[in-house]
Image 1 (tube, helix red, strand yellow):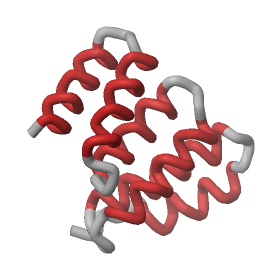
Image 2 (tube, helix red, strand yellow):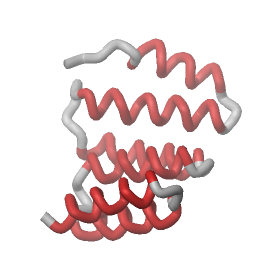
Image 3 (spheres, one colour):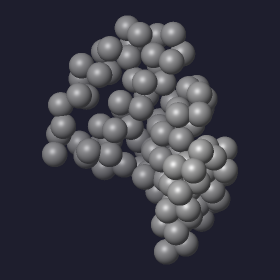
Length: 106
């Protein structure tokens, strides 16, 4: 699938130290598959690693709309939100989320 190939390309770009290019590539994949929660989650991870905490939280929240409840991916999205909140100066909220989601559910 095209979206999967783009996600692979984005991972290569991120590993090569090009997070902006990686984010742009993931956004291209999202235009192809806008209801793919894994793509939204990966975009959140890239944005967080690039210091864009608010945008990372927004992307992770979007991912939650499409990820299966109780899944490992849902847990990962909430932990990205926790990291984003901490990066935005809200350590109490981050700690609460981590306490709730740090135990794998599947």
